[in-house]
Amino acid sequence: MGSRDIIAAGGRAGGSVTGRAVQDLHGVTPGAEYILPLRWSEDSGLADLSDYLRRLVAWIPVTVVDGSAPHLFERHRAAFPAAVRHLCPDSDGSPGQNAFPDRPVVGRDAHNGKVAGVMTGIRASSAEFLVIADDDVRYTREALAAVVHHLASADLVRPQNYFDPRPWHALWDTARTLLNRAWSADYPGTLGVRRSALLATGGYDGVLFENLELIRTVKAAGGRERILPGLFVARRPPTARHFLRQRIRQAYDDFAQPRRLAAELALLPAVIGAALFPARARRNALLGLAGAAVTCAEIGRRRHHGTAVFPASAAWFAPLWALERAVCVWLAAAFRLAGGVPYAGSRIRTAAHSEAELRRRHAGKLRRVTGNQEATTKAVQG
Image (cartoon, rainbow, N blue to C red; front, side, top):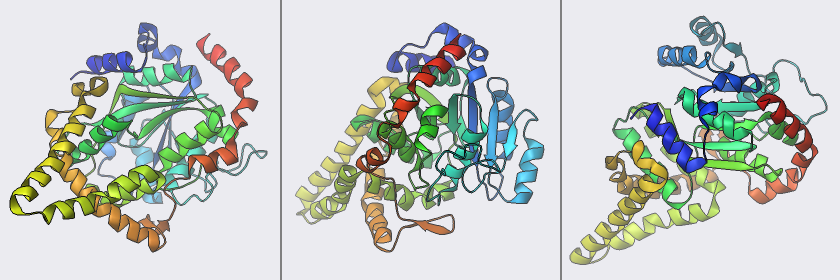
């Protein structure tokens, strides 16, 4: 599937993207920048990332905020294109010194180093339209232009990730994506955000589910979110070993979504209950549960032109993913009682703060910068 087909699906699903926005990305990028937070313990993916950055810098200014060990940092600096701005993250999220002393310190409770990296890049940037992306995300020129285009009318843009290539564990995790799409929307490893909107809040906390925290923080301050489930952006799958290590951590994210948590905690009792039925009833009950998972995943695959990037085989992994989550969510609950889930040598207790708590902190903050946002948008588009 070529990038032209994928961006066409994104245009239909997420609002029209004009030919000018797609074809004339350089006309948009004076007010845009790409921020990539990085923290590697080994750099087996360095060649692939460097190749991607060589393409990317031709489309948009790029800042990599690299929290890797010093010897890896120097190796990355030598491999990255010279046009990439390569920074160390500061512990408070600012590059060296706080360029905005009147603002609150960002990255509060910054156990999640990605947040410090993101905020360092945001404070170092002078662009209003920012594309934040994990190191495994791979934009096409057209998809990047579409995200920047939509930031002209929103404070936050959420596209849809898909795995490319698709080994077995990528298909397994794609089942989770499809189930998310069936019920609401997925959470990608990349977001578009307006710099003024995030700075107005003073930043976001370094919780486990940091992208959800960022989304909720901007919305709590009065920001406008645009969800684009048909704007597809590729990402590289993790290794199988890393995938297996993520199972409990991803289940722990559900503590930020109480209704989802309750539903997933009910899965294991439902499976155990079905297994206790007499043989014929047990088979029918278990087949019914598996069939329901596959059906929901297929609905998610067909929504918003998802068949353009999600293979039919991914839906058949839904029962396996549901069984995995049925077990792992209870293991996550045990970690919660023990003080939090292990992460990068520490423990993080908070998956993400509630919408009510973030509204209490940030309600109305974006009203103070709305006029400046409109002036910036006109200047960039003009």
